[in-house]
Image (cartoon, rainbow, N blue to C red; front, top):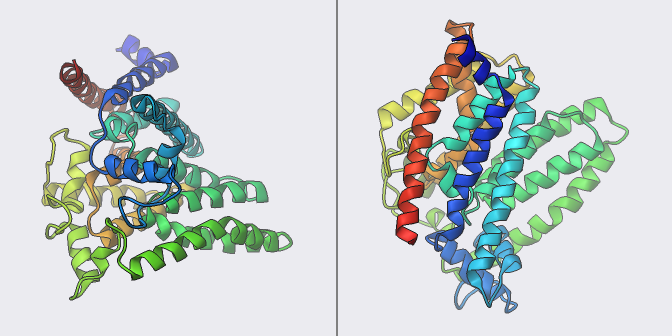
Length: 382
């Protein structure tokens, strides 16, 4: 048992395991585009011709991924451009994990606990499939955790500029994260109390950094008001009867949204932990979700945990209002989710070793599943 404990306390072991996960993520380099990736690619090809169109009309689809696809485009060898773009997303994911690690480090957790929580994050169902893909998940992950890290760093002009730029980029990548603007307002208030002399500079930087987003929203308003976009994130709010209430019901998972092929919202929460495609269960997911809120609530006095709690609550609210939130939307919140489970564990057992043992067993099961998926993909490619 002592040898096992020494092994689990070894940084080298965790570096090796993270390295294995990075190698497994490379399987995405050889996969063809699918789903939303095809839409982004159509827009990217039109960007290279000077038009932000999907087909024949201007598009209101989020701009970050299409512009990156256009940047990495290699017309003579398209697969090379896609692979380079995916490698860029993998590097962003690694940076996002780094931000999460630095944030958890401020919680004074044991290093082995932090490594364990982040390993569970990386091996959870869907993480290795979506974050290295050309979906926005990698960009969302790094910008969200960068935002959280600087939110809990020393309050100065330099950190604020990084925090606010990451927030704007996050909103540019997925509109729902605009709900984190409330945390930015709270940051303004706190900064004003701490340093009134430089508060004017904070406002000036905010205006300058926000300008591109304001122009984009003006553009989106023009497109949406004329119903020109072939794919619209806002059509769900243009229904005849109570569109907000309809989207809230779908966001909670009480019924299936007409734009998706299965119930999402709360019932999809369980899919983060059980690697079964399309699994949904409202009761179990609700229990797990309430456990997350309970674990965070029991550690509310910790200022960083308080920030994580507010962020989790706001993003969850945003998912509900969005109506069609997929299970992959939850991936960015996984470090907070596993942290809250650890908090619950510490309420009953002070020795963290048993949590590490159980977590590593769960990790092995999920890792074996990732090996299985990788082998299936290799056979399919060959």
